Every structure is written in C-alpha cells, then in structure tokens.
Image: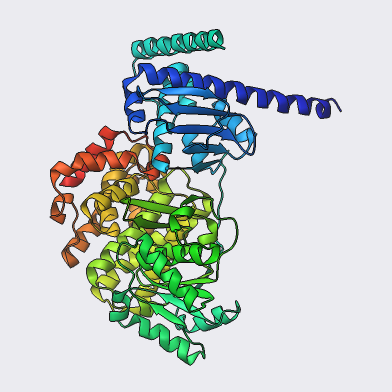
Amino acid sequence: MIRERLRPLASQAKRGYVRLMLEVVGRSMEAISQVDEQVRGEVSVLPNGFLFAMRVMPNGPALVMRKQRDGSLQYIGGDSAQKPDLSVQFKHLHHAFMVLSFQEKTAQAFANDRILVDGDLGYATRMTRVLNRLETFILPKLVAERAVKQYPDSLGLPEKLINGARIYLKVVTNFVDTVRSS
Amino acid sequence: MSYYEFFCPVKVIAGQAALEHVPYEFSSRNCKRPMIVTDKGVRAAGLLDKVLTAFEEGGMDVTVIYDDVPADSSKQTVKAIAKEYRSKKCDAILAIGGGSPIDTAKAVNILVSEGGDDIAKYSGAGVLTRPLKPFIVIPTTAGTGSEVTSVAVIADTEKEVKLAFASSFMLPDAAVIDPRMTLTLPPHITAATGMDAMTHSVEAFTCMAKNPLSDAYASAAIKKISANLPKVMKKPDDAEARLEMAQASTMAGIAFSNSMVGLVHALGHSLGAICHLPHGLCMSLFLPYVLEYNLESIREPLSELLLPLAGPEIYAMTPKSQRAEESIATIRKMRDDLYRDCKLPRTLQETGKVDKSQLDRIAQATIDDGSIMFNPREATLEDARAVLEKAWG
C-alpha cells in the first residue's frame, strides 16, 4: 500500500533529477567549451548556429545548445522553437536517468539502443566525446570511470582539479549572469 | 546486467535451386509485375540469365530490367529507376548484385512506396513509419550482408556527400542464397568480400553491442569462412564451399546489423572514401591491427574466437593466456594466404593507391565515423593515426 503511494513520488523525483541534471550538463558544456582546447577542437567543425538537443521522448525534459560564432557552445534552455540540427533522444525517462546518474555509460546507452539519433552521426560522436570530456573533469575519478568508455590515462590530478575548478567557476558565473539579465 | 535488441525478419531461402523459388515468393505476395535492379557486371557474368530462366520456367514475367546501376549509386540513379518502376506499373522489386544494386534497390523502394522524386528527404534513421513494397534480394558476392541489413548509402553527387538511410522497413522480405550466383566471382573479389564477412563477424563478436544472438551468428559465420575461403580460392567452382561462404556472409550480416561494428569499419569507411579502395579490401587491411589495438579490452571474446578461426586442435593446444594473440596470428596467416593466392594487399603500402600524406586526413575522417562509437576502446585521433601507421607496413 505504502509502496503504491510512493511510486508516483519516485517517478516525480526521477523526472526532477533528470531535468536538473540536463540543466547542469547544459551549463557545464557551455563552460567547458569556453575553457578547454580539446572541446573547442571538437566543436570547431560544427557550423555556426548549429543546434544540438538532448531530450527524453516523447515530451520529457531536454537541453538545447547552440554553437556560437566565437566557437563556444551556448546553453539556451530546455526547449527551442527551431528544429535542432542534431537531436539525441532517450527512448524513456528511465534510460536518461541511468545515464545521468552514471549507472550506464553514454556509449553503452547508444550500444543498447536506448538512444535515437536524428541528424549527422559524425556530429553525434563528437558531442558524445564533449560529454565524456566534461564528465572526466567534473566528476570524481571513481564516478567518471562509470560514466565514460575509457578514463584517459594521460589526465593527471592537477589538470583535472584545475580544469574542473575552471568549469565550475564558469558555470556559477554564467548562471549568475543569466539570473541578473532575466 | 546486460540488455540487447535483436531483429531479423528476412526470410532466408538458401541452397540448391534456390533461384527457382523466386517466382513463388512474388506470387505468394500477390505481385505480378516485378522489376529487376542490377548492374552490367551481373548481366555480363550470365547471372541475370539464370534468374530470367527461373522466372520463365516458373511462369512469371519480369516487367522491367534496370541493369545500369553504377558502382557508387547516386540520387539521380535512384530517381531514374523509380520513374521507370512507376511508368511500367511495377508492384515489387528484385535486387541482384553486390552492395551497390542492393542499396540502390532499397532506396528505390522508399521512393516508389512513399512517393516523391528526392530520396534525400528520407535520409537518416527512423524516418520511415510503414512497410514498403515487396522486395527480394539475390546477393552475387559473399561479403556485404546487405541482403539482411536495414541500411543503405547513396551518394548525393551535387552536394558531394553520402546519404545514409536506416529503417527496419528497408529490410528485404526475402534473401535468396543460391551457390550458382557466386561461382564465377573472380579470386580477388572472392578474397576481399570473404574478408569483409570475416570482419563483420569479428567486430560483431568483439564490439560494444555484442549480444548472445549476434554472437551465435558471428561465431558460426567465422567457422564457415575459415573452413571455406581457402577452398573457394583453390577451387572456385566448388559449389558446396561457395554456398557455405554465401551463407556465412548472410549470417555475418545478421550478426553485425544487430551488434554494430567498430574501429575497423570506421578506418575502412574513411580509407574507402578518400582513396577509393573497395570496402572488403579496406576491412582486410585493418582487421589485425585494430584487434591488436583493442586487445586488452577484448581479450576474452577474442580468445573464444580461436575455436571457430583455427579449429579444436589448435584451440586445445594453445594456452588460455595466448589464445587472443593466436586468433590475431590466424587472421594474419589467412591474409598471407590470400596475398599468395591473388595478391590481396596486406598493408596500405601494398595497395599502391594510398599516399602516406593522406593518413592524417583518413585519421580525421575516422574519428567522425559513427562506427567508432561502438568500438570497445575510446579511439582518439592519435590512436587512429597510430593504427594507420602500423597498417602502412
């Protein structure tokens, strides 16, 4: 009985978590695209104005990013009137929850057919690498190893800490700027 | 706990006198006006005649034959064939050939079923939402596995891009595997397409989306290829061995279309696009080097593959810790034998068509290829460059 009553609450919590994490990921991708040369290299081949969306099917939480003229990515929120050039869609809320709670690697979610790609597959692999790079910087190594296909051997602790701190600082700064301008 | 999906609704019609089943397969689907899509090579090799005889004796007319599919089919070719299909009021498609006629026929089926003249409108994954016209495939090479895959690639020559199409609705209704259709394959094509099927199987068995069902198809295909590729190289008219190879190719196609492929394909697609080398050859060139690169991530499945690759005696004699390396050595030996038999190149240098200055471009294209997503190791630009350097020779 109690379990029956708690079930909707658990689903709501899951939905809330996925929505929150998509915003965190979106803002962090914006930040890493401003500070990390490797990510800027990945993003450089995307056309200016390129719209990337990651969403939960059919009408669940989403994040939308736009490639800026300066070569960075801009987080533009949870929706866009314009059709994205590349859309990565989780088939179910639970699949997004597993990836965003680091229980399933992004590449494994692709391999497990939990994600549909609408758009250029080459760009999708690039955006996955951006996401992996972000996760290696902002997550503790033990958690990041669960999230990415292969934790880079070359990434030392000082570089991880410095870049992680720069990304977190950028996220806070961008967030404050957004609040001030709204 | 693992998760997987597996789907193959294609009816496989294989063996002696399989061609003679084609008229029945169409009539049982209420089709009376089939169109054949093929290429000049198939006609010149006399393979089309065998199919036409089967139709004639089966009491069915072929309404129209389009035999001018080029090696790299384009949007314009698809449009022209669809126009012909409509003007002759056809009601089904029969593709006869290797990868190009089969991919072209898949694209034509989209246009004639969904309407319109521009195939580009339907590119991408999941665009189609309903079944297409009846469609049967007779492969004439033992390698691509296209007769059981749900994808097609067509060139957009105006924009100079390749358009990819993916939908389970593109899968043929039936694949007809008749040994007569591969008997006349020249040795170098037999070798390259055989190694294509081998690569499909090995990557299906070792990459990220492997699953118990695709594993079963992949390992059985490897056993058939290892046993029969040497036979057809020595005795091209060995119908039994040709049938085994054709079945292995179809089984490998079922395996990889349900488990995807990895870095060998990512490198091979890039090399093929930049240096215009045949797909099967590209697979053969990279297979051992990529297995060496992936070794520590795939040691267990690669060790298992020694049994179908080399047989029970060698498997039993090889210590467990050495089986993965022995699998790679067996594949290398297979390539050496093919080089001896028909000069199938083993290194980029041996192809004589690759310039070392092109390696950077090939590496860059490799990391943008979708197949790299399913490779068990996270291959970087530097990794791709390093594998290319080893494959250079």
